[in-house]
Length: 414
Image 1: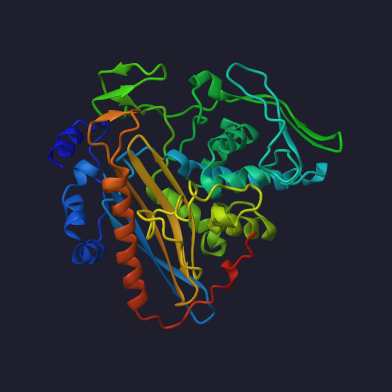
Image 2 (image 1 turned 30 degrees about the vertical axis):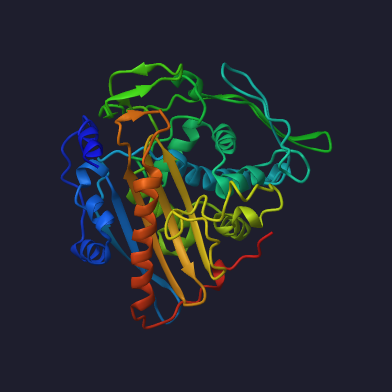
């Protein structure tokens, strides 16, 4: 632990000192009062572990309308964490939104989607052995994103949307600090600005063709972000200096919580902050955001590797015990460079309990990034499990004037 604390002193962020950190005494007291000694050691060192947590209490009124109260623990938009796969969440929503706008061409999310190449670093995608038809589609990519956090699926959504369109739409929705700059494959900044030509075909007939695109979007990279004391570059060479995250993706925790809420509870946000999704889109998302790998027929997964909690950090991640059938977690996690993050809505249908938890933590005791040696199992996953347990037990015990009707979130799984 001492070695971890010393190395984390090298977590350097060359950005203005934040006056925006939010901590609610209620949440801090609640978590600390129930915390184990191991969790308390983490909670006592926010500057080392860079943890942030948002607990969203949900109370229903007589008409079953949800009312939200957010409680924060060390939440700071200027305390950078690498969002990793959590950025797949808004891209899935944006991709369905765009697909609905193309309905006049006779395409939908299940139409075969063939990706070609037109620039350096790009890769074709004309087949998908995980699908029932053996062909790629937007629906299949989104399924894989939520079931196992598939990186190639994210790349294909990024290419379908285009870097410029992604960021302009996110700004329009009210998220100016949310920044998506890259695929999850080694590419230069220039290559990430270029996206592939794409065809939607059925029975040999091209229904819609999207040309290659170039992004001229201007990002704000004026605040350098340097992390760690060394890192391995793309050539597996050790570089003895902090890793530069200035031009990486950025997804502030409060934005993540708000985006998930806007899709789970669209009526709770103003119309200008809602994704343009159809009732069918919502049903599709609710199913695959909560479905477990063992419940999927296409794709089919090896459940020894992709166990129930593979992408469910809160409550269950530190063990491989099957999730109780009455609990569903609608979420998107991410893990990379020692950062663990999860954006979750948790439902207990049996006890009529619902709440949101959104959190992140940094666990990298050797201070070296990209070496695949992180403290996920020792510190990160136990942090999520125990915090989730504490909030869940609190929710089980607190009184509610009106019990929620949670039927909107029930789904039929494969």
